[in-house]
Image: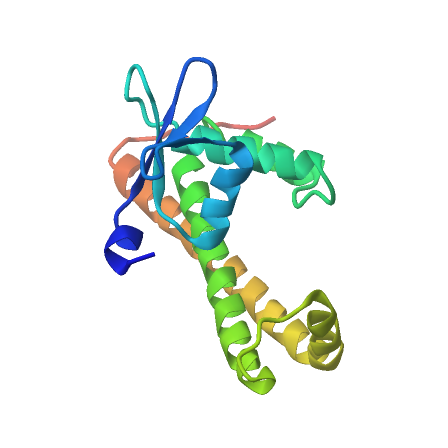
Length: 183
């Protein structure tokens, strides 16, 4: 595929019969094909064929739902419940940003790790067996990296909370609040 085609965002239309039509290949595709586009890093947008509403997030969530239902789920019920509780909460936007930054940080660590590790195997992609062997040897280092990642994540969240408190104090500081006498 040429770099000009690769850089152009792909348009996928969803029709009322729930079929997905890839305008680049002029063919109908399945949800599995859309998943493969994600795995390949291809940029795309899914729109409703009638209204042109952007349905990309909906399709991505549908792929996640299928992945969670088939095989080993990534999200526990506890995590999903906690995420749901943030909808409508004052910190909903901050939580979305926090999750996005953490997933990006995790991806960056994974890419750095993979690019550094790939050199030791003549640039060949890692097979699951190679990953298992590599992780057995690199376990302590990975543990340290993950601990650093968790610490950074915790610090980022604490900073966001402090920023929210500071903003709240500056916004509401002008209002005279009378302390409530608790008896």
